[in-house]
Length: 326
Image (cartoon, rainbow, N blue to C red; front, side, top):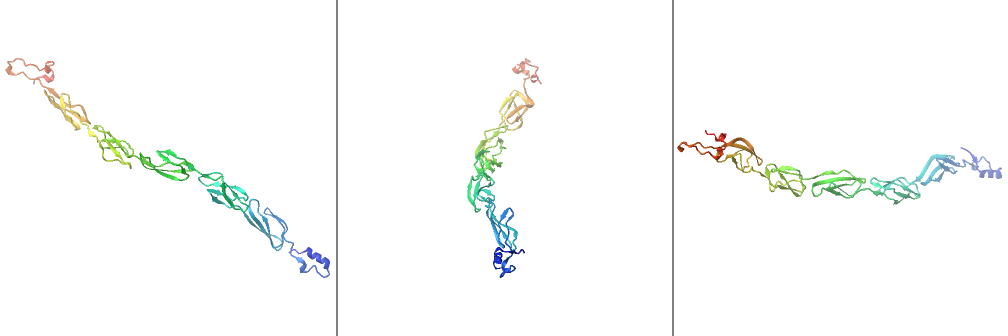
């Protein structure tokens, strides 16, 4: 320990030297205290032993910094920082960093928000809680797509809507920042199919749909498509099979028929034979097999061997096979 003689004791010694010994304990002190110092970027003033030196915090912070002067007149290595800034926090959709006092601090907008917000930090390291240029919420605009009107929607929100009144189902999509995401879901119609000899195309819901009869059938068929995109099983004016019409062709009479396949014709009067043709989906084919042969009469014995009159259909070509006598 450094022993120094105080000025007060030194003066007493000069005046009362015979009566006062400079070596007495009453005129001695341990130290003058801690001298001025520059540490941690701070100028510390001289202070008495066992006392606390306190200086203001750096610019931008609030509070004081302290350091102890030990009993032996040396500084403590520990520095107590009691400095404060406006604390980190989230307020009005803004992430605020630590802020310097007596100044405006710029924050960062939260997800789905945009802007350049600022808030004042008071000298006592408290926030003003009044935002300048607040953040604005991003939204996806209203839009008509896939026959559905999507309303203005906030960022990250998902919206589900029914399909338009012509289809059945629901559609969903999410607003990503200020842009719409993909549409999910299905809008169904009554699907095309063949039912009761008629072909029906895809149809919107809640309406009648007309079909087209298949080949060989005729009619004006229609059926109802329900709101849940299913067909009614009842067909109005259903398709009817087209008959092959009655005809006289190839020397035979062909009766009207609904039968599909080989049909036998009836040879006309004055002819004989067997003839067939096919009826297919209301249309006659050419002769498939056989023919009808016309008759030519033989001369009779009771006509005194006079030549019999030749039928008109045989006179032109007596050598025709149809006119040859047996």
